[in-house]
Image (cartoon, rainbow, N blue to C red):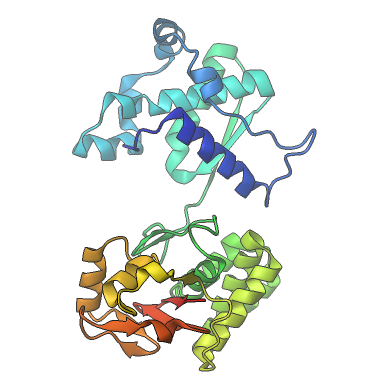
Amino acid sequence: MRNMMTPETIQHNCDCFKRQMERFIDFGEDKAIMVNNADWLLKLNYIDLLRDVGACFSVNNMLRAECYKQRMEKGLSFLEFNYMIMQSYDFYYLFQHYGCNMQFGGDDQWSNMLGGTELIRRKLGKDAHAMTITLLLNSEGKKMGKTASGAVWLDPNKTTPFDFYQYWRNVGDADVLKCIRMLTFLPLEQIDAMDAWEGSQLNQAKEILAYELTKLVHGEEEANKAQEAARALFGGSGSSENMPATQLPEARFTDGKIGAIELLVACGLCASNGEARRLIQQGGVAVNDRKVASIDVTFDQAQFAGDGVVIKKGKKVFHRAYTT
């Protein structure tokens, strides 16, 4: 079950979603419309909802839906049980007030979407349609978009363009062409020609995927910067100009030094001292290509002058720390 949020947090999220979607969708006059279902759901009367909408749903049919089958084994709250009804009512309302007659969603939403088409049919005697989109799965059948530290965000303040580029640059060999097909606008003929690619050619395909997606989400300039930084870094020149970076304030240093644990936390590479301690003990941190061998390691403030130092977390996350 999702975390409960205040109306203010929800509104903030809505504003953020619209800013992100404006890169892909035109919200101009007579174009796309973004609405908030709170505008109609919060006005619903419980008794009226039970009489007018609840009577249209069979509990037996709902429990046969895959989304409920999975939750029944772990425990299904009454709140979660109502999700299909609320989503169906959304479609019904949008059909009536906006002429929306087709709903798109991931294929894990199929039952909820069909609930909406059935509600429209029963209440209005009209046809509506649902179309699912294949979820992006890796070769192991797991949802993509998750990393060890959490989700890959469209917001550059949560996932920098460089880290976004690196995520797609490091997808598995078995997944890269699938991702290019599903997520880019490259001509299918060009993608089909990549089917025979092997070995180092797959690395080229990953570069193409990473560049095209970063350009789509963050723009061509940021995509160029991310690609240049990655090529320089892994090509051995060590350029870190376009790498995600943190400026360390004077207060972070004690007697002109900063400990490895505090450095990781200050740069946002670890959420807590405990996480940083475990990462170092597991050998997962390097600074300027030298492994941090102990949690007691410290760094002099002078090392962070100029270009600063490059911190490597695991095999794929790079971050620059510097002082003025």
